[in-house]
Length: 521
Image (cartoon, rainbow, N blue to C red; front, top):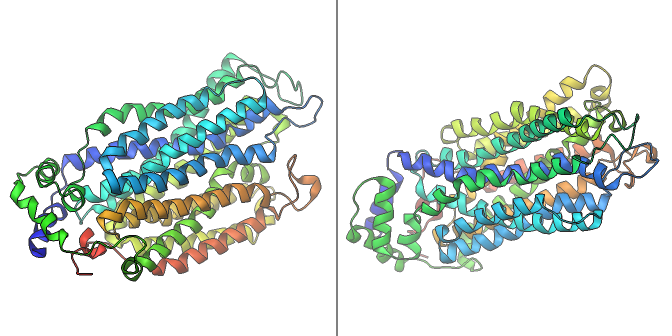
């Protein structure tokens, strides 16, 4: 029976790459485009929101978000994402991947629009409603992680599975790029229509009333790509592996396999899959058998994703502060509100264009050639090296004339994060666990990553502050400085390199071979 089951599932593993595979990449990938746009665009507009709602009359510096408000606005979507990853991962294994796939996208569309419509005139009211809607936006985004990865891994053949899952994840790069591009375009439009002087010249006129519309439009634009793909996501069939191995619906499994493979598969052929799986192991997540088979794997996928996201998000969310610290963005008081947003968006877009996006697509090109393990290990190691290269001679990089090389090396840390653990930590959990626990374990691994993102985004706000109390941002206590923060991130990256050795290599193997589903318990 096991041999017959493997025969049916091997039809999926050995299938030629079909047009349907590319359709699935685009539909699933557009969710990640939206995810990245929504999660990273908030970092672009926080300084503008600070000017609009928190400027103090007579202050020599423009307004900025208080530390607790800034931490809440940046972090609340991560808390929602973490919750969504755990909930939808579990739900995807219980009721099916396709059943809840449209729900996550619908939440993203509604909450993206609602974030921009955050109501009220007082800062407290606007920030409270913004945080509320961004939590639920994050909840929908969280569901997309385990569901998209699991659906793509179960559709794909084993020869190009890594590239397909990586291509879905690589849409994040375009989402980040779009966040910067939309901000630049909208800011340029508003600057031309409503010119404003620098803050130092006229504090009140430097932030025109129309600036309140700019950040709202940028946030609401995240609903557009999600809305465009909602119909196609609802039309996707359930994965054949779920219907055959978990739902045990032979007729539906045959129809789903036929649609994906574009070959006729009969109900009788598909029926052997549930018949075979019925007499195999059915251990649960908290069983000793799961610990024996996959315990170290789960430690590996959760810990590496945690450490990667501490380093990745602390840099990504607060790169505007790093650019300001090295003098790449002019002092806030020398710019109007629109000018400041324009400079931050331009810097972030340049980093995305040169470091982030190429890294993602290098992974797509080489993951099924080099393998997941090597890409992740080398990525972590190179991140460590470049962070040390930034941190050790930090005074040199911040002196006049050296800023460009600092940005180049900073871009390389993003390149090796994306041609490295940022992609592989997403891919591997979708390949190594049993079908009935695949989305759940991916959700647990991803949620661990979001814990890292929360540590990175909240911690870096405080840690990166100057050790000199006179040089800290308004409302912050002295921290350990950017240099020491980079050293700390280098330690995180090297620990991730060591823990990569707990994760197996799925290259060229079937999902059943990796999860050992056809072995007796």
